[in-house]
Length: 385
Image (tube, rainbow, N blue to C red; front, side, top):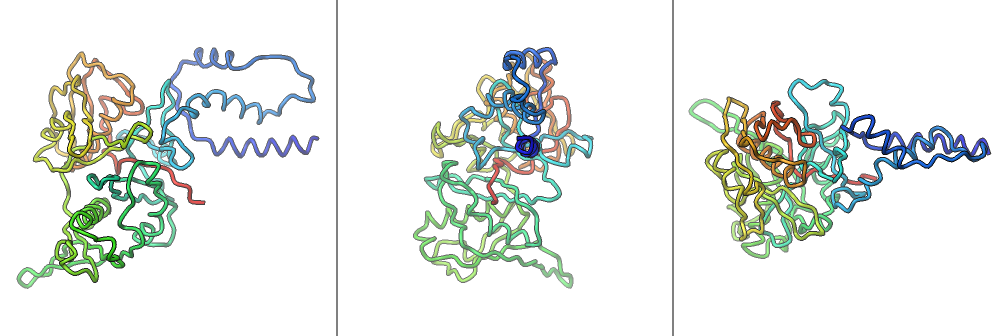
């Protein structure tokens, strides 16, 4: 019997280590009260008292279970979202590992990623929606190994649970990628023109018409722009297949972020706008409108008033009108995440939110503090087993 309890102790401790870190801003008195409500204290014979580790596991689960059991697509076995919003000057210890989304009265996950642990690699794929209208970036983290980044991109593309995200199939499956550094000759000088990705293995059925060619090309551009490539070359593809004479230029886009959701049974995804904008302010103005043609919803509500923006070198400051009520809701976090991703599009390094009745923090997004712009949108967990 004692050996059985010792085994359970070890198992419980192992399970505890696997649980995500929890951020709880409640007062100690409130936490104590909740614990008393959850636990019914009754004296039991000593032979059935659970071990210390088991009791700790039960107590911890009783506190977090209401949050984990809510029906939210990003919090399933395959894609529990992990995010971390970090402030300038934050301690290095906070960078050692990801923390899970903040637990609150309701699940309000972030949809951005701002940090990658040293032992992992960030991969972002451009995945088309079911109608091929929007190509949406989906981000995953994989363990870093000796494989080159392009090989990791190829070997992990099938890990994206497209059907559960409400997306279509990626036209980049079963392709091989390599890279080549281009050099431009200007007079007597050779000037490096960045790396281009070479794409091989495109099957004829991938490009059945002009629309499929456009979806393919948009998927290429939306995928490889996150890796810093300047262009893509399609090996063995003739110009009559609808591609841009066998190659595409991958420019830095200047887009705003909107919301896509196939229907209410699927998660909401941050989605770049179909068109580009001349300025960050122009993008914010447009983000207050739906784009019905592409089934994209506004990311900034009509009741939200952005009084002004300040552009300070590599930092943009967004001032919400005093008196604006920004509650800790999914809509507010989606709006802030969309604005943060839009700041990244316009090459800002930091973003700061001000105003709105002197709000100090919404979720783990601090106001009045310079925050690094996100690395990528729509992070999901994958099962690498």
